[in-house]
Length: 208
Image 1 (cartoon, rainbow, N blue to C red):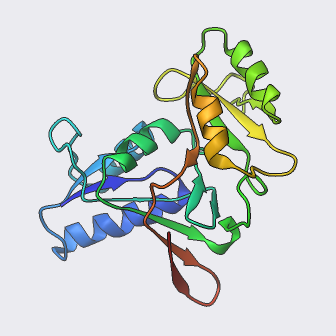
Image 2 (tube, helix red, strand yellow):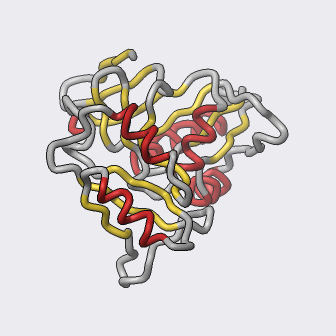
């Protein structure tokens, strides 16, 4: 089985569990495709065998977290800085399963989490102005030391806050992706097929 390896604090719990199952012999013949350099390094450290989409063009299942989950399994992802590779891996998977805590659920996207948008460095200010024209307040993501955060793909990220949420994520996705210089957004629409939501009492399933 080929497994897409998510990025972020919640996905790391899955990586640890997967590594334990592989080492114990509970799972065999498993290979992972990481969604970021960070998850790649983590998988190597944990002893999870890796492969690539070039070698395995169809992934059986991807397990990843989410920053916000709305009805219909519409997601916002990307606060961990890996939205593009996460989406590439997820869209080349038979199934994407989201793991998250109940605090990530919301009635409307954009009410709990900003929307990350990855843009090329060239004329990124123009991309920011365009994003602002769509009704959000874009903020260029920076590292703790004040330097500009650069994605694994060499791009910048704008975190876009919508005062009243994102009422029509599909329409917004189309408008954003139609603009040259914008690489992709953290909107994951029609991609996830199942979410496992944990709270203090139990874990429940949420289908699309």
